[in-house]
Figure 1 (cartoon, rainbow, N blue to C red):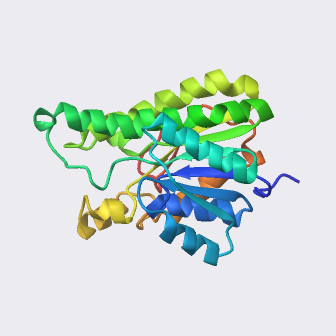
Figure 2 (spheres, one colour; figure 1 turned 135 degrees about the vertical axis):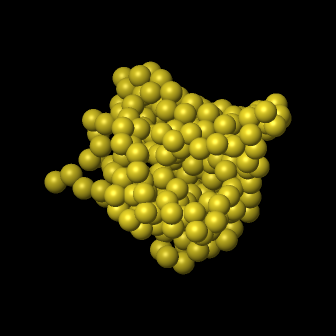
Amino acid sequence: MITLDLSNRVAVVTGSAQGIGTEYARGLGEAGAKVVVTDVIDVKPAVSELEQQGVEVLGIEADVTNEDSLKSLVDVVVENWGKVDILINNAAIYGSMAKKPLWELGFNEWEKMLSVNVIGSFLAAKSCISLMKEQQWGRIINIASGVIAKAPPKMMHYNTSKAAIIGLTRSMARELGEFNITVNSLSPGLLDSEATKKQTSSDYLDQASSRRCLQRREMPNDVVGTALYLCSPLADFVTGQNIIVDGGVAFS
């Protein structure tokens, strides 16, 4: 019987010291995986919380825009657990983003956004691929966003970065399939999260809920089940796909 059991799997989740990243880590741990929480900010509070819930977890601070930092991350994971099976590329700039019309966006804002959201995902995947190729098994999930279907104003650099994730995912899937490595992207809708609350009001979150087929707020754990599916044997023949999880706002 094929199940969502991820026992004996090692999963790395970037940007997982808080928010939806921690929820991905929690879900993977509850499914039996050993989980690496990694972020540029302090990972200890998230690690402590997950340990108290019985998750086997390793916390490592790392910068997805720095290849040496990522190499050190993978080296520590291998030293402790011997392999990397699953990578969820969640690290991204969003909550701290300044919303501006396109004519006010500067080069530095574009460079920082693309460096973290796109190049960071590429570099994190690259750091894990040799291990996955060697074991002839791997799961990579790149986190895109529902903005790709709506292109909300005053966040062109963010919208573009998440659209680029779709192209990155498809290209990676094409090149890595021969090694039994699947690569998919996941596009959450407007989440009721701390990062979102820095960008919008509670009233707007309620208005967004009314536009969904499922008329309620989308919570971070609403996305976790789909991520777990993509990590599991249930999705062995799924690759190069983008799955929108937004309660029925956008249809692709």
